[in-house]
Length: 366
Image (cartoon, rainbow, N blue to C red; front, side, top):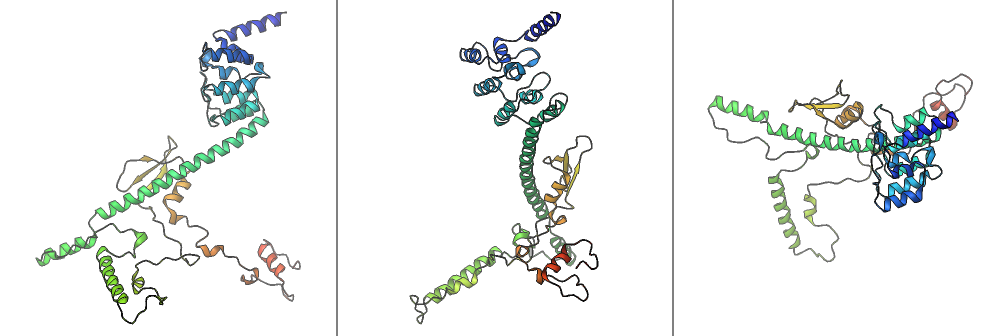
């Protein structure tokens, strides 16, 4: 009898400060919840004691077996899936601590943040592990892995954009400076008391990707020359254009050559920012930062490990294991250089395979 009175007092204390919608969600009374929501007598996100909303209260053992149904109804009518209590706990925290697998799946599908932390720093996965809810913990661990990978992919895209911007800024700051040849020519002309007759500075920013591009003057002159040859070829009296299958002579003057397939023997050299960009991790905030030789102000980078940032910004320091497309071609084991053969015995292809795969060769086994 004393136990019943104690439980009644605790129940009354728990229900103190809760709205009728909170009480209906606490006991899983779906018809009452529908009536209160439709009549707009109570807000779906109304605040109760300790910052609890109806979506928090419904995630308890008292609302069984209508917990999932009530939760889905609240989400469909505007309940905030990531709203927190005064302790910083989201509905996903409460579902994980109660071991409600169905409710956990509903919340994740509705967009709940699986990486959210409460005031203590616990994630929903931590609470599922603390209360020994293995099925919920396994599900949340998989969701956290997928969320971390999605975040990492977004950060890698941002790093690629940062890399492109830094390369453009590096080129701009390099070509804005007066080239050394101009300085030497001006110094020589000043000593000889001669005017500087020619400007040796480049007319346009030349990318290292297109070192074989022609200048604008060469393009125009070659184009005019090619047009003239094409006119002479077209007006030649001995040529029959209807029967000739040869291409016009102007096609030989194209400035570009395009290779397709597996002709590339050397990998393309991507611009490297070593010596111009410095990347490190701040000891206090643990956030990666970078500075450039033209801007000493530390700036934040996407939140990735330091080695991942260095692989993008300094590609030549981390060469790829597959240097060219030819490395994808299949090879025959018989054409590979032999490492050794057993004495007095003829080797077979299978013996050669074993010689390549075995870490320790024991005498007499081959």
